[in-house]
Image 1 (spheres, rainbow, N blue to C red):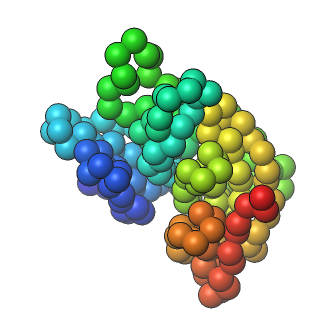
Image 2 (image 1 turned 30 degrees about the vertical axis):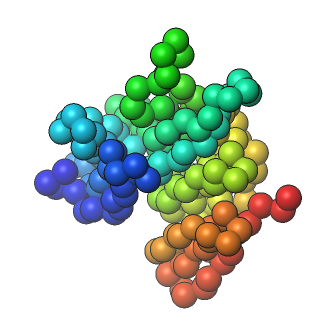
Length: 188
């Protein structure tokens, strides 16, 4: 991470996990990114190749009484590959007799945005959704339990510079480089 520009940092609600994301350019001027996921309890770092991430605490199965699952969701792109993936995986130890939850799918970027990559990500526990904003200004919405794309739409012509949860609606608020403020919410 020493050669990276730090883009984001977050801690999960239990304060047992945190991550740090940094961008860098390779010799060909491609923008790449590292994520360092860190377990506070184990004092152990796990390096990942990816661009955006978030924590989520929500139910991901239909099993009655299963409760919430503590998830780490991120956009992975390995340096040697061109494929970007959404990965939602359980962090910590699952309840006895259960396997760790993991869902994954390839990101289908818009045809008019070659070289696009994820910049911001947020989970909506209320709806079981994952929100993502890309450098080209596209908004993506995924259903977390299957990592299935639900919706994609261009929401900004300018680069997004800030992205926060709307705690009232469990949606998001985006501020772009031009100073425009956009509220994105799920229509129930």
